[in-house]
Image (cartoon, rainbow, N blue to C red; front, side):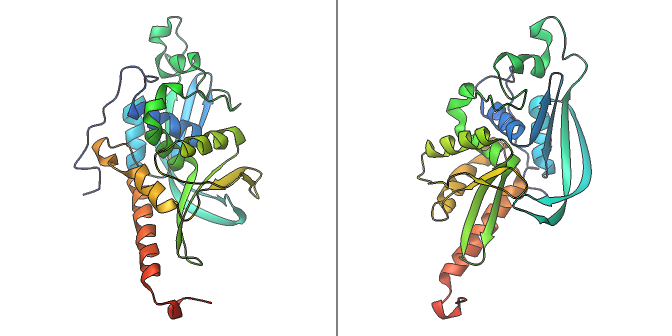
Amino acid sequence: MSETEAKTEIEVPSDPLAGHPATAYFWGHVAGSGTVSDDRIEVVTNDEESAQVLAAVAGGDLEHETTTRDYAHDTSITRTEDEYTLSVGGEGSERDDPADAGLLGRSGALGLPVDGRGNYRFGAFASHDRELLRGLLEGCGTICFKSSSGTVGISFVHDDRELLELARELIAACPVEAPVDDLSETSSGGYWFGVDDAAAPDFGTWLYEDCEETGLFAPSRRRKLERSLEQADAYDDEEPTDRPR
């Protein structure tokens, strides 16, 4: 049985732009790994259960395929992975009555990410920054164990500099102290920043704390965090003589 099969029923507000944990998580994913046009939203995730959660929030159609792509930090490295694409929109998204326009019609009214210009206005989700950040991390972030230093690495990677600046501001405002790096350019032409290694365990633990109560998380990403934390603990327990010099 999978982690979410026990299964937390996803609570979804009638208004997809309402201040709510589910909408905050969804729009975090949209900003992190989505594409938005006038009549369609597509959101991509590598976690099937997270994709099902996003579909529960927004409706739409899910497609699954296996893809091979360049690694964001080093384009000389490729990786193959499952990819789940949620498509929302099309018919019914251009009705004259805004009340009937669905998720897409109502999203445009608040200036949520619809044009790729970095005009992200997430004020409605101010009380749900943790879910918004979790969606962003799962959409455009990485979690890893750094074997060279025995630490956990958490970073965010995206082509949109303004989105990453927003993520840095959200992290600065979170209740755990988590210093972050300045933005750097990736070899693919985007940008990235990392959470300070010393703060990554506390930040990651806070980010996924109590997530099962709402079901708003990607189980595979949480498992990656837990494994990385365990590896870091094991590294700390080693005798200094066992460590590489």
